[in-house]
Length: 212
Length: 262
Image (cartoon, rainbow over the protein chains, first blue to last red):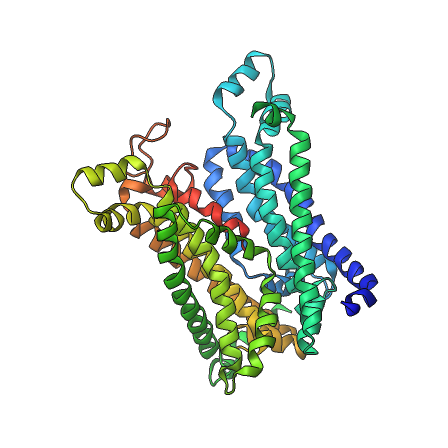
């Protein structure tokens, strides 16, 4: 406990790095997944291709992906961009499917009512379909957030500073306190991500509260 | 850069001996295989019991909450705690296998549980009406119906195990992760990248094999081939589209489970 108190500044800094490495790709991944998911839904011939293609991406183990990134991006091995891009790819791999399924879960009657009320094309998508898909998309986002936090810690093996540093350092120095700090930090961070996403989804779907 | 990787991969010296590629692939498969078998022996019966009886659901939630624990942390914690207690060369293997089992149990357990629990009560009733006993209902109706979700749980567990077995090289486990970790420590990018390519290829091949198993093992009555009730879409989906593009097919829904993976 005193060790934690002595190092609280460092711990918070590493936690901040961890939040960035896990959080930014989560946002970028979602932004890219929205149009892709919509395309997958709209053109059913592309659905299988997009879902299978993005699923394939997720098959590649994280450590391997971190190491292969410089080869694809032409970056140096310790460039943080590698982690951001790799994490974005993982988020994207999972999100395309949830966005497509979320949009698909909008009831036909609702869609027809919207059309009858004069909603067309883009406006219907933004005002009707997308908001109604929020619960499904948010559920998927929560799963991605938890998995991102865990995957980012693996990047400490390559030498990227975040909470995973405490795991590798604690193991190398045979110092269990550090490992516990790393694990607890990651779990707490995952919990925070989860709560924030849940709160966000709750805030933008007021009708869900009335309906129950 | 690509040339040096090509050179590394085709160097005959890297294809023989205890640090050769065939040996490392074999190690990776053995550790992953052992862990998956142990995990399946624990998770499938447990999932069947919980799904069938509806009791002790907390085991499933507990297993799922384990997913928030970073696998790297779990690996180091178990290695540090158990490693010194085990003499002999198994000091690295046992902690790794324990962690791999811990990580493989949640997806298999929740897949089995969801599969058994989601069996259409009408199918269960019909089986009883036909005179099947509890054990028979389980073997002939519930398990086949649960198979798509169960297998997709096994599939995500396999990916998880292959990925984590790679990381386990950092606690001195053999397998393909050795190239990544050893290459890193001496800054040999060709070795690292070659290892990464091999690991990615292994994961893709295993996932491909399992998806074929999933397609062939699941009863055609479930894959949509023969389906003409259930949801309101017109039927006659071909096999190829059956699980790849029909969002309502069981195999497909089952893939949602892959979500919470590392």
